[in-house]
Length: 426
Ligand code: DTP
Image 1: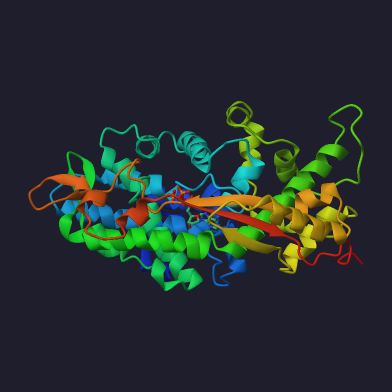
Image 2 (image 1 turned 45 degrees about the horizontal axis):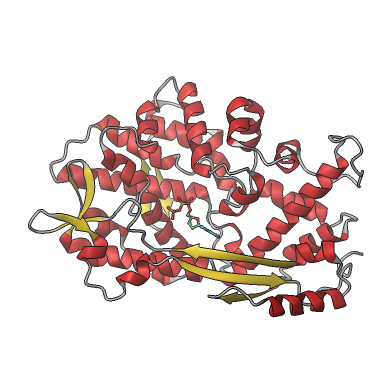
């Protein structure tokens, strides 16, 4: 492709048009590591609650790159010197920030990997791309990992008011149809400024920042941690737990292990089911990173369809239930559930014929937490007219600002209320 063909304008339902401004950015978008994001949904199984939520990490990464371009222009227009290399690097850093997400984004991070965060995989993949592009990503990597000497670049990529959050709130609000997600990102970006190369928001932008924090709180409880989504995610996690158990038993890894019917999974996925892969394994054995870059939601769905026919009743029942959206019942509470209630649910399931092993898959307890703004973390700084810079929590006269800084915890229990085991198997 000639250089002139590498400047692309894409249609985007949220922002209208998105320009891919440089050849390098274009080549990164074209790269198979980035194209894989087309096959990873942004909101995992939230589409079971909000049918429009079919957008992917690909859409989000492009949107965040677009907002980063706007942030660069705003800061330059206020007299801050930002070179074209820095602009490009900042856009690369945000374009690639989620490249390390695996299938179903957050849902599987917890059960396929051993304490490895997607940010750590993103960094490994950026280093890999840097080798492939002869060092052209070095500046972007230093912005992403926070080692670049101008801190505001890292703050725009990863902080409590970054281009990631600005795009995903807008975008998730748009695709779910939950109007409260719309945060007026363009206005907030216009209010951005720098003091000593640290990101600040001008005082007249404070209402927009409050609106942003409120929107984030609302989107968490109304979308990301919606009770039905929690239920779907728990079911998916139980499916993987069971598949992993069966695969480990059927593989001749341990002498004397019980042999069971083999469980289908492509080799790239099987690797992650056989063991919880650690950061050290990723760093020392290239096989894991290579396999990870081939893995997406489609692999997991095709396995679920196959596993719905597996002779193991626990696996097949869970898979068929998820495929048909026959979901567990769920209860939420601000307090831990009483033992008596859990015993009652257990008895209910036992009377439907479930034994101890089955109970551990069909009766699940857990908790979800969120805080819209954590003053203990990196702060959102407001620049007052006097030039003084203070935390948004101190600048706001919003009476409910403390609500936004609280860590809210919800306990949940979900269970297969009307399950008759085997009824799904022909
Ligand atoms: P943050 O910056 O908010 O801490 P992050 O993990 O760094 O988040 P990501 O872009 O990786 O940023 O994740 C946020 C996106 O994932 C956003 O679109 C909301 C979505 N999301 C988060 N948790 C869930 C969930 N449990 N189910 C569905 N979607 C989720």
